[in-house]
Image: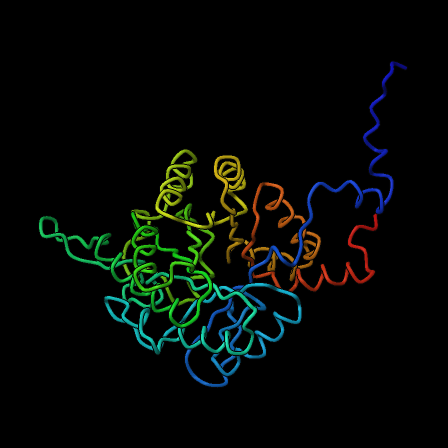
Length: 340
């Protein structure tokens, strides 16, 4: 037999050996826990298409936050489901808005927990689009007004920061949104509040359950004039570079599972933290398959999130966050996750 003989299995011979040479680790510190907060009292309603995820009223938020802290999660991402909507999404920037109230409540209860505020208009507009709409005089068609939308988004970001948000996360994909929000935050005295830019957000089929959860489905047309074509990779780099130049502090790729190549591209090109959003459709299809006994949910989720980390994600937004935290904590406390 020729020498040297390559025997890769030498480093796979036991769980201890595999753990010793593992190239990356998924930890609780990598996870962000999304929360849907809504108006009312005593509301804890499971979202039909997202088993295990709930609409929570403010009085139900305390238990959710206590559980997140107990599990060691470091950050939550807030989505608001308001009582009223209008054409300009005015409840998005209302000081008494549902997101602003939730931010204040969380920071009072768990000051050390990072609160990330989703900054968009789709949940707050009666038309369900992420920006303001006007009619084109020449064609009569409804058009998303980019620059007018920036003013409302900037106002919303400032109101969220004033309520105590630690990070502003604009998800609207309007051109110039990072610069507009950065300027508004700085002018209002929040120059130390970072922006987690939804830099590469594709017009994806994986958002369906979220739109049910956030009551944010567009009432006409689609979002393809501002969200990206799933076929485009070079465009993703242009979008991310634009956000870097405008002052972003994090770069997000959304969705994650079908776009791991994009995560790697951003990781290789830029030196900012890269965020992967493991979105609602990715969550729900795993839950559905697990409920039918077709897959091992824990094994699939851990493999999926490990793949996102391997692709280059520094942070993962996932609806599996509490489950993963429990699994990681149990492994750390003596129940090995790799026993085969």
